[in-house]
Length: 113
Length: 113
Image (cartoon, rainbow over all chains, first blue to last red):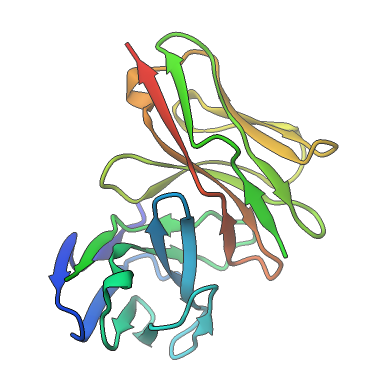
């Protein structure tokens, strides 16, 4: 089974802190994604990566950056956390197989105080 | 730009009754459509997808979906609902380039005993 793991299920940080969210997948998938999920807004794509050291902006990249130094690991970075970044963050991976489904991690619920 | 609409925030159904969760889409080119389910405090799980072929797609946990090109719809159905089907359901469309998804806002399904 494909496994996508995220470093924390729950995280509480203070405004202005630098926050790292880590995602690891064990199936050698080329593509990885970071979403945020907010009630009534569904899932919105923050960034994605189709290869090591490659990244592409999604729909809402402002206030975020990413890092992909190894194929299995994709990190989301909040350089200076703000209260409006309080959300559920979901990581996903996808193989290079036409029309395949994405595989999701369990999510990190981040609260910024 | 592509879009996916889920017109109902919540669907209520009694256990044993049939259920339908609605989804309409607007895409350029051929539509490639997915349904995911999210149980409380969990990540998204893939249910089923339409790529091509038969308009009735069968998926996990007894769910199926009907693709209707003329109505640009991809409604999720189940003949007999279970209380354990209560969850948040997302419809999604594959974007051109075939790696990123556009999600609907989600529909909460509540199945009462």
